[in-house]
Length: 301
Image 1 (cartoon, helix red, strand yellow):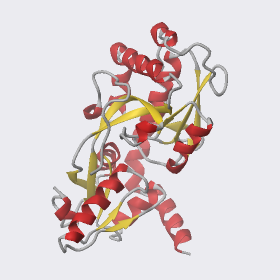
Image 2 (cartoon, one colour):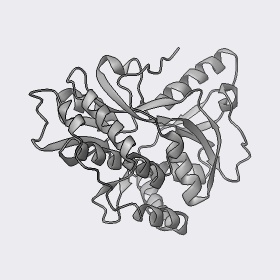
Image 3 (cartoon, helix red, strand yellow):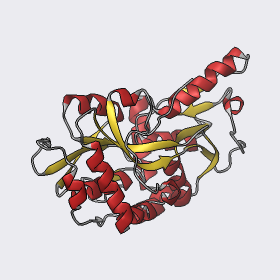
Image 4 (cartoon, one colour):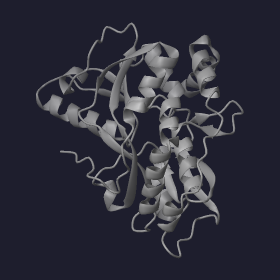
């Protein structure tokens, strides 16, 4: 019953003036950004490499409305956002057409391993654990942000002591969850009040929980938090996680596609289309000067 109520309220929330500015801004970004084929990137595709669908780069990406990283366009059937835009630049650069596969965050590791798509783009951060199974080509440097209601009494979350006793929205299986749970374990060991993680499956429900007071804060990607602040004006960022993370295009370990993806990203940086994508989704602060293959990843203590 609660799920039905949340879904109904979420639908109302998206149709309300609260989301009007965001819908308008996102609609302006529905025109695709293209780039010419990059012979240097194409030359780095491993000899004999078989793409899942010949002539296409098949990319798994988020099926949830999580602007600016990924969301549904005004036609409710086309995926737009910074990750779909970057995916298009990769496909164009490699001389391929783009096939986006909407998927859940929990599905991408098994999907890549099973060969259901060529690459995954879910705002995936490089970790040493993930590098054991996947290869990476970086395209952004992401921070993790704590956001609260604009009129919240919480003014700053600077470290683990500040999350003690709070109800915090966080994604299951994410780096943010690992940080939060690690902080909570250390807090409990010192006798501080426990954190109450709140796991929700979609951004609409998370936003509703925060604005209705059922959660004290959310902890997620900086880009998403900044988009909400700029487009809705109902929240504020009050702190960040302990480190920035490399966000990367992810592919199956050892298939050799990572160096071609790296060359494609670097070509887009040189020609300027990369910066166009960052600018229209408000991610300029997360840009990189050059893509890296399998850089040092996050190690959790």
